[in-house]
Image (cartoon, rainbow, N blue to C red):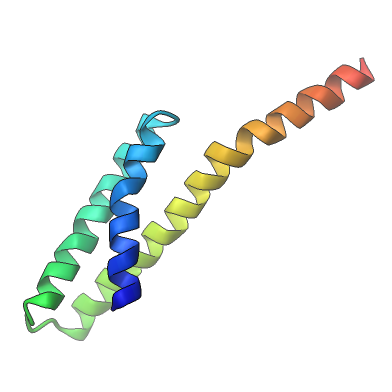
Length: 93
C-alpha cells in the first residue's frame, strides 16, 4: 500500500507537469487520478469492497500507469526523435 500511496501523490502532480506541454493529455489523466483517490479513500476507511470493485480500481490504476508512461514518451522523447528525423532529412537533401 505504501507504493500505491507514493504513486498516488506522483500521479496527482503529473498533470501539472504535463500542462505546459500538452493540456489535452493532462485533462485526460484527471479522471483516472480521481478514481485512484476514491479507491485510496475507500480502502483507508475500511469500506467493504467486493472483489469486482478491487479489480476495477486496480485496472484503472494500471491504465493510469500505462497512460503516464505513454505521455512521458510522447512529450519528452517525441521532440528528440523529431529533431533527429529533421537532421537526417537535411543531410539527405
